Image (cartoon, rainbow, N blue to C red; front, top):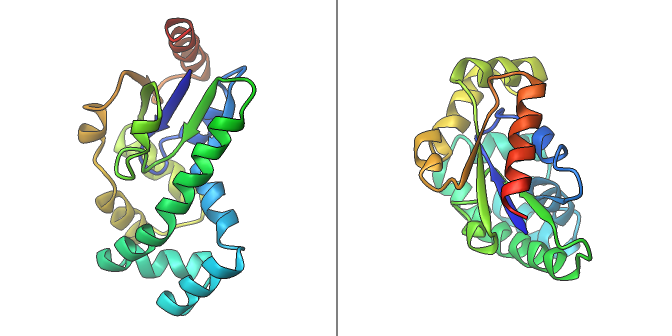
Length: 181
């Protein structure tokens, strides 16, 4: 069973992905970060964006939609290839693909079921500010650039409500894993 787990930034999807017991977790962000270390990709990114520094790069692309599209055009096909390879070579056969851009990138076509992590805007912003990775201005830009929660939910086979307790989230995950066996 291949599950695509998606949700907006700050929804808690990465923490939730790790809670899928018996599943290999494929973190699309980590794959992308790893690819930035490859020589040919590094040179493409530097040529296009004049930096490989992830913090500077995020400021560039989240402040310019066309730059974000250019970065995605470079990275998404490479990440797709990596995800397909991991799925093919995985012995467990149970995989969770953790990707904020699961739908936008077309990776939802690689999965059997789509699980959307939903969260209130208040909780989302509170988590992101607490992480100290982003200021409120950048948080709002990123949220605006991402697929809205409402649109994301239209693709959902299952929804995990991450506004509730950890115990409740565990129950939701158990229900999903039982129903997808």
